Amino acid sequence: MNLHKGETLFLQGQSGPLFRLRSGLLKIVRVHPDGSQILVNIIVPDEIIPHHSLISPNPYFGTAIALVASEVDIIPSASWYEELERHPDRYRSIALQLQDKLRMMQQRIDQLTAIAPADKLHKLEAWFEHYISPAKLTEVLTQDEIGQFLGLRRETINRLLRSKKER
Image (cartoon, rainbow, N blue to C red; front, side, top):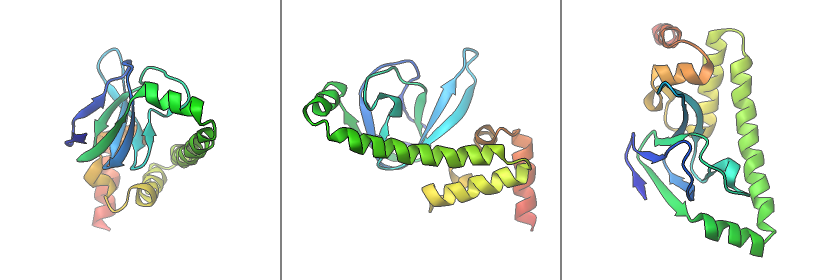
């Protein structure tokens, strides 16, 4: 399945199949009752999502939206879970995938715990370079999304990016 930038793959609260991101980038947003959205995760190629449903089914935690043109494989839930039952050795590969994602998220936590806003932005840029290169942070995320990802206001992100550009 091909998604264009901005297209929704699945909606928060729905249930359905799993997906493997073949190429592109997806963002996972939590939608609050008032309709506001908060960016909580970025999905990179070769990830199977939703992560919390790799071993047992659960409704989608957030809404998945293509950040760029993306190619996604649909994995029917029934066949995924039947395959796990028939081949329990696959649990190891799932555990390794989850371990990689946990390490990625630990680096994200490190960004959030930096004190200075400039340090938060610098750590996010380094994280982006490591996991999402060659795309640049500001080519993929809006200033508002960068702010959500770092717990900063959009105005602060704008000021930091402008200051960096001037240097």
